[in-house]
Image 1: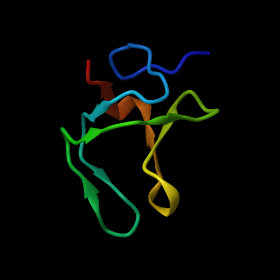
Image 2: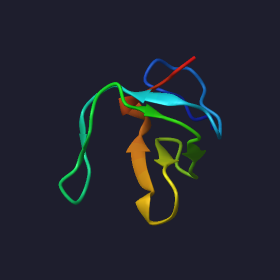
Image 3: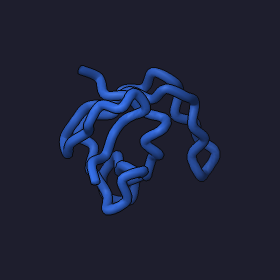
Length: 69
C-alpha cells in the first residue's frame, strides 16, 4: 500500500512536508502548523512517517501533513 498525505498525494522517502495542525510532542514541546519537515522517512505503517534523526526522531500521522510540492 502507498503512503499518502491528507490531500491524497503519494509521499516518498526524502520528501519535504508541511504540518497542517499544531502537534504536541512528548516532553512539552509543540510543532506549529506550517512547520516544514525535510527528508522524511516512511515506516511500515502507511499511516505514519518519521521525522528527525537519532534520539530526536518523532512519528507523525499522515492525516496531519501535506506534501510541499
